[in-house]
Image (tube, rainbow, N blue to C red; front, side, top):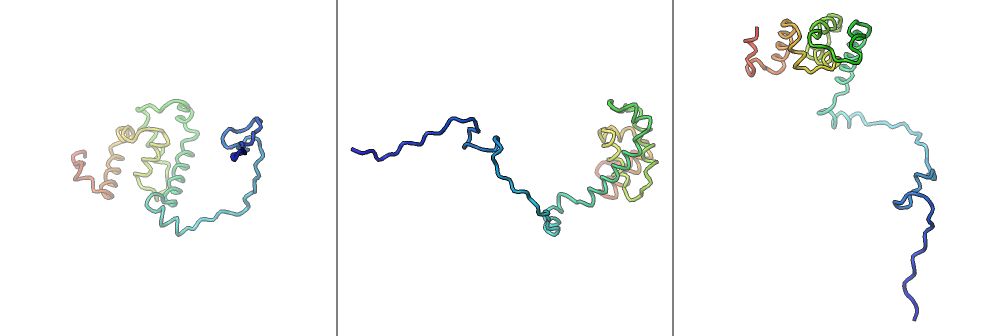
Amino acid sequence: MTKLVKPFPKKSRRPGDKIFDNKFNRGEVDVVPFEKVVELDKQYINTVMSDCYNAYDYFRIAKLNKIISEIYKGTKWDEAYVSKRVPKFELSEIFEYLRSRIEDTTYSEIEIFVEIADCLDVKYKTMYEMVPNLQKKKLLEELNEAFDIEKKIKTYRLF
């Protein structure tokens, strides 16, 4: 009687990856350098990503963030609160200082408010509570123009 089934070949017990005898950990992988420049189809990106990402707005806000950071560097608060949170009682003064130094008028009050709060790592509600009433009025007027919030939260009672 002859055997019809062949026995499995014996594998050597050399060190290596246990999953599928992977060679990546031993440095035996052939790599071909990628020399082409990757180009993206701008029309495709604009149609697919327009609802969730706008590169122009992103770079505008990044520029504002850079402006605020440059103004904030070298101030007495930058040196005092390097590793600590900014106390609430100083938020109003810091906000007024930073807001008065921003000369670019292409940014809205809301964008400036949000970026200053982000720069100081402060919640928007806390920052809003601490800013002066005149600034609150400007913010509410801008929000009212954009989203018609006066009817929803009755802001006319605030001033």
